[in-house]
Image (cartoon, rainbow, N blue to C red; front, side, top):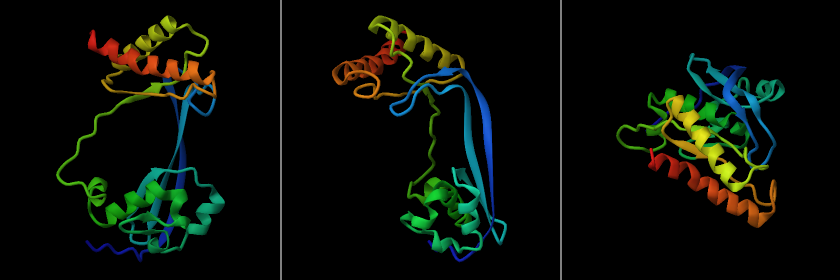
Length: 189
């Protein structure tokens, strides 16, 4: 496959999307309570020909200005992807190159046939730090129910209590308990 990566970047736009979660979100393995709000930065990269790549990025205005006028092949090369200069807009560049190749991104990445990806609820954070094991299991059952009410059937669970939020052994034991709590709930429904 040949893709012309000599096009130059003409414009970079960034917008921060703000939303409200159905419930407040707790800790993850690195940072404390996330709260009821959510925000994500979305960037659109435009080329001279009008092709646009979209993706998540936290790039700042000064860094974006340095990319204007650059050729795509100065930031990205197939099959490996972003070069160091392109890292701040990695996801945007993958989308842009897939569009230039007139391929869905999954095919550019090498997948064959069509791909369906099931959505998952990623809001099961570390909300149980002050709870007993039984209370933690009940909380996770409530969080799974909440996700199901919003149409989710798959769930991503944050782990990493040991050594950050709890003593290592106690945190690892709680992680194991939490991993099994929603699956036990789902099997008994």
